[in-house]
Length: 66
Image (cartoon, rainbow, N blue to C red; front, side, top):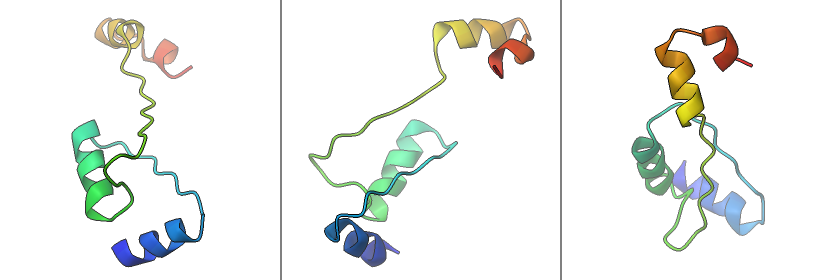
């Protein structure tokens, strides 16, 4: 897998990964399979905001899913 991902990247193909893992785990997997390299820009999109956490705490899952 790492070699295949490296070849795709060398060919200029953009690869996106969507994961439900913890951030640290996802980054470690990205480096292990050569998807990430030192110096690359990493963009993290997360729903872990104070508003979402507050809604989850009071059990308002219908508002969280919107």
